[in-house]
Image 1 (cartoon, rainbow, N blue to C red):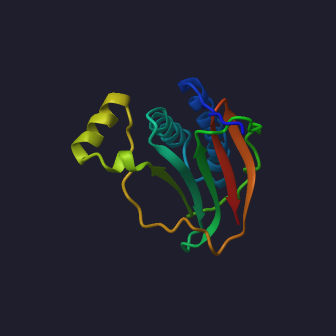
Image 2 (image 1 turned 90 degrees about the vertical axis):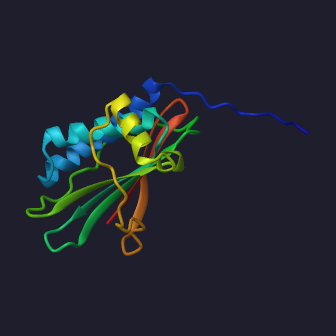
Length: 168
């Protein structure tokens, strides 16, 4: 009988490399839909990077809504801290439809450790690391039961990764 353990190690640089791949996707989606400015995208990516650096980020969801409030397309990026051996794909496949009067929603799923902090503690972390967005609870359904989903890319560096799912 063979026993052993596997240690997964990654650095802040690995985390940032992976989140930057997400960021490249988000930039392309924002441009193709016409629903976010470059500044808005940069601020969101900066916040998500800081949440990931601190170990709070579990997943990110992007939802494209049309002017009538219908989901057109969605993307889920699930964080893994055991991504050893993953191949790392390039960002791409982000030519989403231009959506006048639509909405592009970003939802970060944060760990229980984040939500167990009281409001003052959360504010203290935000100030310490430089998070600028509100990032409050949402009631948006992110199950995408009414859409077809495929796992289509992985972004990884050493043991840190994000697995990308696209819903249409």
